[in-house]
Amino acid sequence: KSYKPCPTSSVTTVHGMSGGGPDVGHSLQQGGGDELGGSSVGRTGKGEKKKEKLHSDKGEAEVDETLLRHNPWLAQIPLLTPKMCEPLAEPNLASVTAHIAKHWPSDFCWSSCFEPSFLAALMHEGYLPTAHGPVDGPVEYILLPKLHQERCIVLFDDLKVSRSARSKSHNYQLSVDTAFDEVVEKCLVQHGESWLHPPIIDSFKHLFRSGGTGQVKMHSIEVTHEGKLVAGELGYSVGKTYCSLSGFTAKGGSGSVQCLGLALLLHERGFDFWDLGMGMEYKLKMGARQVSRADFLQMLRASRDLVCNQLSLKATNASCFLVPRFRIGSYVRVRTPHGKVGRLADLQVGVVTGHCGVHFKVRLHDSTDTKECIILPVQQLDDVCTEDVAQRREHTREDGSVVISGLPGLPLLVRRAPGWTRCRRAPGKRDAGASKKTRVGDDKTAGTGSDADMQEAATPSCAQADHDAQHLSLGAGNGQQRHAAGGESDRTAATVRPVDQTTGQESDDARWNRRKGHHIQWNAGALRRRQMRLVLFQLLTKREERQNLSKRAARTLKKLRINSARQDMKRGEGGVVRLGLCS
Image (cartoon, rainbow, N blue to C red; front, side, top):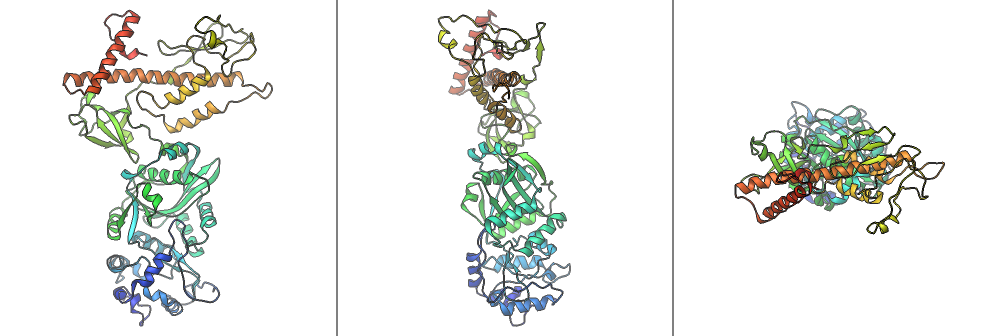
């Protein structure tokens, strides 16, 4: 029942592969381009391009025999046919793939069929479909499924995210399955047709628009900057495995954001690993590794039939994936019970020591073995500092001025009532030099009113507030990093200042909103430091009781106690510990 395309070419059958030498297959491998945009496979044959004919005009067997006669080099590599995908086929595609993986010393096979269902069956078995042409014969292009001898894959726990990619990610938007045709066109513009010839593109588009076949689904990844598509790639998913086909970049740094953002998105959606095809240097720097063909097929079979979350994504700031919620060194509290954490509240505090994709490596602060770490998702972690200073409300006085209260010991933010004349303190010996400096955003003319004004006592300048806000938003004292979703708007508000079109100066409302944001961030950083001192004091005290305190921790505990005593003496509170209110 098995189909033999040509009686004289037994090398094209699966059981006769040993009769063909590996030289032709090796030359194809050397001439074949990378899946992510390489050069086209070298071909033989002569003559002008012939129009492609449907398989209905000639039988499938006759088409393959004609291709073999006009292209003798095809006799040196295995032939795959759609008949191998039939339920009672013997041999079927799975057994053929297992035989090829074990005995075939090269990468390529060939076929004359570009049916979407056949391509989906090849992807399900681990082949990476590529096209080649023009060739001599009844069809213009042929299919060259590639089964790498060594496959480059990414296990998300080994992913390496660079700092430059994290910092650049705020400027890009990441989306999935929103511009498939445009990504295809961009890939063709950057790499040429290469292996993306019209028949295989049509099959990819059919699979994408139809929603895939079984567990095989086509995807497009898009990265935009200011509304323009600057990076993207084509790929497909097989169960919980994702494979990249081809990609492009049109702006420096956007390719790294696209690759790393996609990797973290795949990990968040529950994928097992990411197949990158051929190994290259930039892939290895990202944390990829090379695995043998047999190991790759074993991993694929274990995950290809599993159900995974949908990969589709609307335009989202890439920093939401690349910038972690907790930085290394942050103190966190385990939100849900864990086997190694225990039930006591003091045992649920830990320190983030590393990132494993979108997960966090946490070292329990009070565990007996201080080097023992557990890997937890972000859903099971919470910040040790629970109070949010950003929830403070504005209060309006009887005179019409607006006040935003701050923490004890920190200044208030006051917006004067309209029509008030600004009062300046007489310069003393200590602040005579400081009074000569003009703060950013203040009126240059003395005696003129300003509707947005900060209280003079112990209030930083706007330039200093910008610096403090940028520093405190990263959580000084705890290593806590501001969530990326809200960071973009804050950064834009701090750098872009609306200007009144009539006067050419910053409007009073814009100045008030800017200073209010600075004030909230400044108080949030101070509140975090106060809460962290209280948490550290409790943790170190309990470790001191168990005589499990290092020299460095002992010095820290001593400083905390001295600082607490000084603050208590200033406030006249006696021996009451007011550590939570220390500046």
